[in-house]
Image (tube, rainbow, N blue to C red; front, top):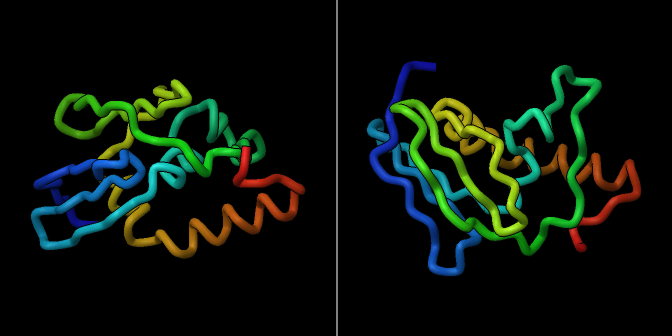
Length: 119
């Protein structure tokens, strides 16, 4: 993917959606729940694919705050106090472009493991 930069990151008034506008015109609205359960943190992703964790019960999670990390990422703190994932611009763009597939894979994983989006 060619390097693109975010022009704007905007959190919705209800704190449940992050909209990212890139300098190439791409715009993606990502649910806080999706960002939380697909966090790039080691806590969620593990250190190998076998260690990846399926995070249930985050349907009502909200974005508490966002902090820039250098010029390449943002740290998102969620209202469940998870804040260890650094969301690079590349990762946020991938999530936007692959939103439907990644979300469906998450839902399939929950079903397979007998887990729920509800708390």
